[in-house]
Image (tube, rainbow, N blue to C red; front, top):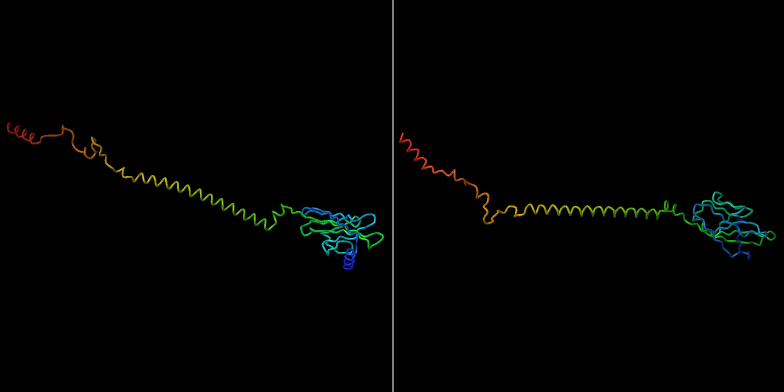
Length: 214
């Protein structure tokens, strides 16, 4: 039954000469409810169905995803729950004449689904990949900076130690003091006290004379 309605509706659309060229633009954020008004309804026309794309028909007698689509028969308003980018496109609201079924009135609405950047940031693969690469790059740069600081400090410490070793091993530390007028410590070693300079032969001769007198 619904196939008959579909082909019959498409036939009427091709035959109709009263289709409107005015397109209304409707912008909705992804994940929200989209409400598309049927502007082809007036006092001489009543709602017939909605057409999405080339073959998708939403209306009475045509089974549709009730969890996704819902429409009001009297006003023709189409409600799309949890809209996503897959539902973006042109929707045509078709209304037929009350006196003549062959007289159709059509109004088109372009549905633009805007991406929710918070959701994209959390779920989009390319965004997460880019975020992961950025985090890795920041980590690599931080590690490189830390290693550079450590290397510079080590070089400074090594230079300081080398300078200390060069000072300790300098020949000037072991050079004797040959300044004129100043005797070295080794040369001054000996008996400089004149009181201790005794004439031992003279002492022995005096002791011998004293024994002979006794």
